[in-house]
Image (cartoon, rainbow over all chains, first blue to last red; front, side, top):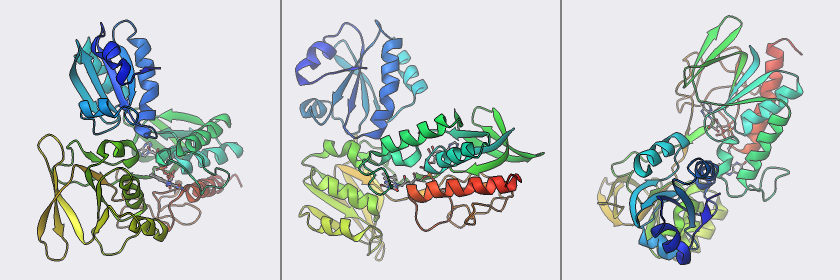
Length: 106
Length: 300
Ligand SMILES: Cc1cc2nc3c(=O)[nH]c(=O)nc-3n(C[C@H](O)[C@H](O)[C@H](O)COP(=O)(O)OP(=O)(O)OC[C@H]3O[C@@H](n4cnc5c(N)ncnc54)[C@H](O)[C@@H]3O)c2cc1C
């Protein structure tokens, strides 16, 4: 399961990461997020060593949510070399996500 | 050939599967999205007997495991075509594969209606206040709709946002009185009746909605940063053959035993004509349909 990241650990684990990072901004009680959870867990294993996966609770991390202008959960942001490279808003299916990661991160 | 193919794995379809297996019928359930159907979206279910204060997600999960444990075959896929063949029916799936059944139970439920106006894809337009409400803390938002979903969304948002407008195309609300009364107690909620959204405007996110007064046709601009849409739903029946009768809104016309105008095809749950669309009535429909399937197959 992707590790939870908060304001305190975001810099080290996302911005300063050696690999591309897919960060999921989610909310408690958000059904599309729950649907996405097993997919992200599976992809984390498939891409081990190539792409990192983390998740950010938007309710508990308002500053990060504001900084990245999150307006929908789930929102997936791909970070690379400390900056946002791409974003997906709303629920996505696994094949779409694999395609997106392939295009953006690999 | 299966005794029965059930299209849709919501409360109606999964109950049909449970009853089919209890009657020793071979059953296949097709589901295109979420096992458990629309109820996964309910934060909490309080009115289904035996599931007090259970999450919709948890209830959906227990429907699925029960049907599976009883031996129903479950397959992920979207049915796109139904045709009559010798001795039964052929259902074609989106991936062009096909399955055959002596009978079919249609239990595809409904789908939420989208606004269908320019700007509806802008960031800041949402169909889920539980998911996205928190992003509008201290801001101004509107909710569009007049049913329970809209009123619930407005109440939730009233706790977060600075200001909530509830935009409804009629004067009176379909929503339950209890929810409406609670809304009246929220000082930051303003109801705008007799108005429809014509356009959502913004450059990279929502900044304004353009409203039209249903009587005078006059337009006005309302500055908001979030638009929460809850304007009802329509049945997932458009792909069915014409031989299966439906009403003007597309709901399948069926008798109490679930029989449609096409013998051997039955309808259960939210997609059929009925007064109350709930889990308990969907489940009841599913059970009743299996009795009809057994009668049709001459098993009773
Ligand atoms: C937010 C929310 C809260 C609710 N709260 C309550 C509550 O507290 N209590 C209550 O009793 N009811 C509640 N309801 C209503 C309840 O969810 C529905 O009445 C019930 O789910 C209807 O069951 P169904 O099986 O007829 O349809 P659905 O639950 O809609 O299931 C139909 C299934 O068919 C699938 N499907 C559609 N087309 C196809 C296709 N072509 N091929 C394959 N699969 C297909 C769909 O993906 C879906 O999973 C709520 C609904 C919502 C949205």
